[in-house]
Every structure is written in C-alpha cells, then in structure tokens.
Image 1: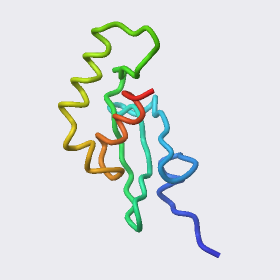
Image 2: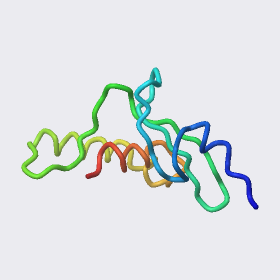
Image 3: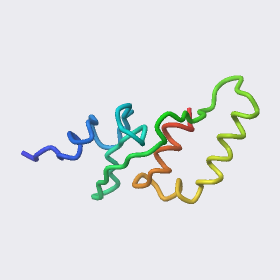
Image 4: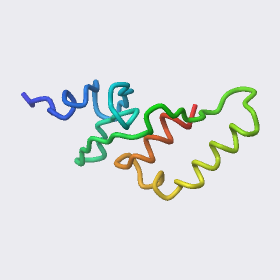
Length: 96
C-alpha cells in the first residue's frame, strides 16, 4: 500500500490540485499541492487581504477591466500551467 504524500498533510489540503485558503499565513492567501504528471509542488499564492475579481453577473466595467488587466499582465505565467502560482491565482481568485 502506498504511503500518503506528506506534502498534503503539511499544507493541510485534501488532495492534489485542491486549493485551500490560508487565513493564518502572514503573506499568502491560498495554498495548493499541485501535481502535473509525476511532478508535485507545494505552491502558495495570492496576496493576503487582497481580493481578486471573479466575473459576476452585472459586474461593473471597472471590475471587468481589473480582471482583464490581471490576465493580460500574467498571461505568459498563467500559460505555464498547474505548477505555477499565476495559474492558480487566475483560477481561484480571478475566474468565476
């Protein structure tokens, strides 16, 4: 029987690719143990105390522009995939 990955317990997440809020962390708002193929990496992402701007019905033009600016600014890093913080920040804090 395979031993559970100690990184999952250390990060306090329920499984791979399952992000979780970390309100007690001094600087980062979320953590995820990312797995892509055989690579596994613990990633902390998001600035503590700063909200993203996921798409909402009837959102303001400013909120839409804020989201589009984030995605344009970080497009190259988001495209790198699951083993990067920008991918998770985009998915968790900026997408609905």
